[in-house]
Every structure is written in structure tokens, then in C-alpha cells.
Amino acid sequence: MLIVQKFGGTSVGSAERIKAVARRCLATQRQGHRVAVIVSAMSGETNRLLALAREISPEPNERELDVIASTGEQVTVGLLALAIQAEGGNAISLLGHQVRILTDSAFARARIREVDVHAITDAFAQDRIVVIAGFQGVNKGGNITTLGRGGSDTSAVAVAAALKADVCEIYTDVDGVYTADPNVVPSARKIARISYEEMLELASLGAKVLQIRSVEFGMKYGVPIHVRSSFNDNEGTWVVPEDKAMESVVVSGVTETRAEAKITMVGISDAAGIQARVFRPLAEAGIVVDVIVQASSSEGHTDLTFTLPKGDLKRARDLLAKHCGDICPADRIRSEENLSKVSVVGVGMRSHAGVALKMFEILARENIRIQLISTSEIKISCVIDTKYSELAVRALHDGFELGTVRA
Ligand code: ASP
Ligand code: MG
Image 1 (cartoon, rainbow, N blue to C red):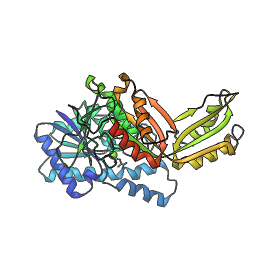
Image 2: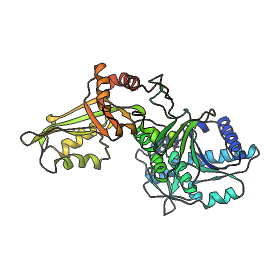
Image 3: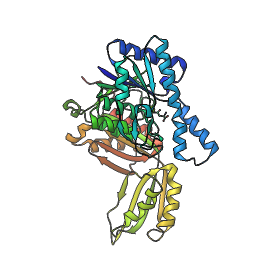
Image 4: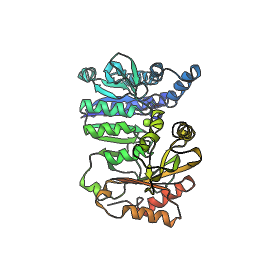
């Protein structure tokens, strides 16, 4: 088989751990597999590099920032290749531009366009383990780019897709993907198999095990992703195409995202084009809005409510005051912070009725007030006061019986 293994920052956080990774890669190769390994920087290293850059310049040039941030991975590929050699193995390290992981030119958040597999397959032909720097690529002009925080996951899945690997193993410091955060819900269970679509929802709703783009890549190219622990040999969670059995599970997981805020513009005109005028200055400022709800209009007026990260609230209010004063005077822009979004996710929702009702009943039993609701085909989210979000997650996890092992 051809196996791609990715090790995150904590898995390569010290010389000892790098040696352990080297032994695991070698053990895999000795079972007769071809192995490509993608590594992140040592834990804390990318933060340190970015902070250093900001000490020099508060708003650093993004091209240079990528030159700096990408060095964390250059160190770990070298160290891991050395560690494999020290164990008697044969390995070669490759940086993004040496593989040729071609990206667009959006520094700090580049997207992969193409992965050239030649350097990797040449090394396989010499029985080498290929150690590839995650997080980094190169644009058409030869400049180093990076893929955004957590981007090594995406490097790994993209390399796996290009190589048509049998599996992309993501080694991390947890055992897999859980039905809820085990720190909040002690009875949370590891999920054995989950669809790409559910994983995408979970990743965007706060489950941090995989960068969202890596799941998109996996889904697009059908790469089986196995999320597992680098500290043991347990089976982790398989992220795979949806199958019939998954549909019988109505809810697969419960998540919460905190630090949300809400803005309501009261009594604005419901004329055509108003919403575009409201959201344009926010979009131009890079503010990501999430749940948007417009009340039904009466006599040409309506209320428009939306959520956004709490950290962007002040900026958003200032922008609205500046650009939308004629639509909505400042005293009619209400806001609230300290909100959480709790969500239940599951492909089975598509074919089961009453899931929303059940969620509302569970929250009602705990006396939790729902401020906003949004849904997709496989997800229901409720925005509530952060004070109650742990309680909500536990109640939903219990109510949907996610702690119960299924046959
Ligand atoms: N080292 C990068 C980061 O900390 C990429 C990664 O770890 O996936 O974001
Ligand atoms: Mg990560």
C-alpha cells in the first residue's frame, strides 16, 4: 500500500517524540508499504515565529511573513529525516518547492493548485521514506507561500490525493473525532466512521482536529482519512464517503463555538439592496458573519440580525455607523456578546423527521433560551447565552444518546 502519514506539532514537539515518529514510519515501511510523511512545525514554533515577525513590524508584509513562518517545518523535516537515518532507515526531506506543491499567491492562506509527484515517486523507487514539509508551497513566481494555520493537514491530504494513496493517516494528540469535546462531556465516544460532509460541518463548528480545507480536499478526491493518536496504536476515526449505515445514525456529534456576538439593526427599510449595503463594508473589512436572520417585514420595515466573532464586534459597529447611518441610526443598532452556537450534526437528519423538535425540547427542559436558529441539511444550530453552552452540549449529548455504544 501507499500510506501518507501526517504528524502534528505535539507529535514532533521534542527530539524524543521525533524519534518515536521515525520508528513508526519505519515500522510502516517494514510492513511493505511505501510511506510519505508530512510534518508540522514543533508545537509552539509557528506562534513563536509569527510573534517574532510582529515584534519587528506590527503589520508585516505577507510574503515575508510566509518566508518566516514556513521555517518551522523546514526544521522538522530535516530532524525527522535524520532520525529515520539514525534508526538505520533511508529517508529524504523535501520542502514545498522541492516537491513542487504549487499554490496560488494568497500569502498566509494560499490554496493548493497542483502537487507534482515526481520527486516523491523517484524517492520511493529508491526505497526511501519521503519526509515532506507541511503548511508550505510555492507560487508560480517561485515565492514561498503558506496554507493558513493548521495547513499541514491540507498538505497531507493533497499529497495523498496526488499520489492516489490508499490512506492518509493524520496523527495527532487525541484518539480521533469524538461525539463531543470529552473535556466538556465525559461520556463522549470516539466516532469510528464519519462522512466527509459531517466532518466538514464539525470542523467548521469548532472541532479542531482537521483543517477544513483538508476535509474538502479529501471529499473532492475521495481520500480516506484516518485521524488517530501518535501516542498509541488504537484505531482512530475514519473520514470516508457516506454510506447507508451512517444514515441510520440521526446525530453524530454535538459542538459548540464560543465568543460569538450578535448585531440587530432594528426597523430598517426592507427595500431591495439594503442587505448588500449592510454587509458590503463588513465583507470588505474581512469580517465573517455567520447566522443571518431577517424578521418578516411590516409596513416596509424589518429587523436584521446576524452573528459575528466577538473580537470583530466593535469594528463592525464602527463600520456600520460610518457606512450605514442613513439606513439605521446608531441608537437602533443593538448588540450582544458572550453568545455560543451549539450544533447537532448528522447525515441521518436528511431522512429523519423531528430532529429540530427534539433539540428544542432538550434545550427547553434545561430552560435555555434560544436566540437564533440556523440549519443546513445535516446540521441544526442554536445561538444561546455562553453561560449555558456547556450545559446545552451535555444535555444534547445525553438527549440524543450519543454516549451509548451502538451495535
Ligand atoms: N505549523 C502550522 C501551524 O501551526 C501548520 C500546522 O501545524 O498544520 O499552523
Ligand atoms: Mg492541526
